Structure formats: structure tokens, C-alpha cells
Image (cartoon, rainbow, N blue to C red; front, side, top):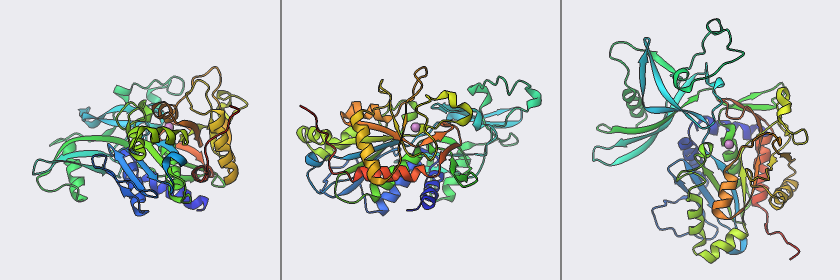
Length: 436
Ligand code: CO
């Protein structure tokens, strides 16, 4: 796969995945097309050696695995992890309000949103809707309006001369997007959603919307940026870029050794949910792959997790925000993230495994450590390592503007991460010898 076709496919995936629900559905589709079998956590599983399976939880977290030809206790699993969620604005349950002749939506801030870039964007709405069928059964379906229905207009500079010096954003009062003019008959969100679902054959006569989880997103798709197309710009590069690179590695790596991809929801809010990395989703699936405690312990001791999440590239206008010795460049290759306080799970052994994989794949690597006088972000890596007891390393693609509605990454780095992960999946033995 060439860099441009990788980035084109990445763009199609991200553009079609405005929410974790959509990201999971789109990954699931690609896996099914490749011959993976969908499992249901509620069913009895009969897993076979060499088999390929996928399972989702809450429709927002996904685990897919390709079992090796040999016993899993002897071979372990080459695991890759990422997260499906991105910081955004979510609709409140009673979202519709009217003020000053306009209709607005009440929104909640999900995760560490960089709020300024959300102003003056063409926004649409997507998410999950739960319906009650005519026979009383509940059913969930996804929705994506795709067209721009909302905007959070900036206040003109003439009305706020201090806007460029000190602009504080009150999330409750300044963020509600404007979606129309209030007038005769008012506006009913239920009607807009019902109409859209009907037009897409997702709602039958007699079905009623019971509840929803909807997010706002920018309708601007992924684009190529730079005088020589050096960059890609998009929403949700954190962390759908890593989800997609992991998916490609899972699908494209040569057969032989067991491998697994986990994409968790709720990383941006601390992972504390049934679908998040603090929950038992992966632990439960691995338990069912192993079958008993002895096999589980042996399998885990021979496994490793590469937790993939974006890193901060050194922004040339703000380079003092980085340690001078650890400044990842866009297009400089995937970044190994280190934090001795375990905000990242990397250690010398797991980093060494990644360095070997990179060498085999001819992929350059960089390192990141936060400035010693600054706090550090985290990932699903340390959480998964603690829940599972698995050796883990944190890597990711360098980006600018993390958690903005439009982030920037190097156009070479996505495919480089996919190649690195593919090379990791092909590694024969993840054990490391010691003196003892
Ligand atoms: Co992230």
C-alpha cells in the first residue's frame, strides 16, 4: 500500500467515523469483509486455532484477533491497542433551547477539548439512537446527519476588544451552537432525527425514539496540507489514526503468530467504564481465548501490548514546551513515549522490542519525554498493563494541535506506524533473556 492510498483510506475511515459507534461499525465492516467472524459476548464461543474473530462492547469498543497456528500458551499474542473516542461536544438530554429568537443546543464538554477551534465551524450531528419497536423490543441504530446544521459563532472583535489577549470560554453559556431561528411551531429534535432515520430505512412505522447519545462534529473531511503534501489535517486523528494503523496491521501481517487489536472507548475521560480500558472487556476476552488460569498466565507472559496513541510533535512556534533532547518531528517516524512515573507503560525491554520491529520494517523511530517541569498525558497503555499484567509499550504518531477539532500530522507517519505494527505482529518470540 502506498502512502497516498493509505492516507486516502484513512480519510475515508475517519470521515465516516464521527463517533466511537461509527468507528467500531466501520472497523467491524472491514473485518467481516476480510473474513473475520463476529462473536457475541452473550454466546458460547468455540474458538479454533488460526481462526479470526471480532467482538464489540457497547458498540463503541472493539476487539479483533487472529489466533496463531500453535498453542496460545506457547506463542502469546502480539497485541495492539488504541482508543475510539475523541474530545468533543455532546448533546445534553433536553438539548433544545430558545433564546433571543434563535434555537440552540445545550452541550456537554466530553474530555479535554481545545475549545477555541470549535467556534465558526460547520457542525453536524451523529451518534446512537435507541428505539422501541412496535412489539415493545428495544433496538439501537446509528445516525449521522452529515450536513452542517449548527455553528458556534464567535463574538465579533468589535464587541470584545480583549478577545486576542484574554479570552475565557464559559462552556455553559458560550458554547451552545445555533441551529436555527425560533418561530411558529418551534423545533423538535425528535422530528429531525425521526425524519432522517426514516429516509435511511432505519426506523419503521410505529417505532419510537426512546433515548440518544449524540455528538457534534465538523463536516470538514481529512485533507492534504503543505507545499509538498507533507501533512494531513483532520478531526479525530487522536486516535482514529492509530485505530486504522492497527486495523491495517492486523489484516495485512503474515499468518502465523497470534495477534489482537483492542480499540477502547472512553480513554479521553479516564477509561472508567465497561467499554473502557479500566473495565474488564479485554481481560474477559483474553480469559476466553486462554480457557483456564494456567494458560492465561503463560499466554500473558509471552505476550506484549503496543499501546498506540498520538504524541506531541515540537511546534516550531512553541518549541520551549518540549525537552530540547526529545522533540518529535512530524514525518520523523513513530514516537516511543517514555514516562518513568508510568503515565506511559514503556520500559527498556518493551521499547527494545519495538526498536527491533522498526529495524525489520525500516521505519524510523523517535522518543518523547515530557519536560521535567510539566505534567504528562496518559494512554490506555498503563491501565491495560495493570488490568492484564501484560508488558506494554506506548508509541504514537507526532501531531500538532492535539484535541483540537482539526489536528495536523505528517503524511508519512500513519503508514509508518502501520508498517511498524505489522512488523511487530510478525515477530516470532517476544521473550527477553536475563542473567538469572
Ligand atoms: Co489519544
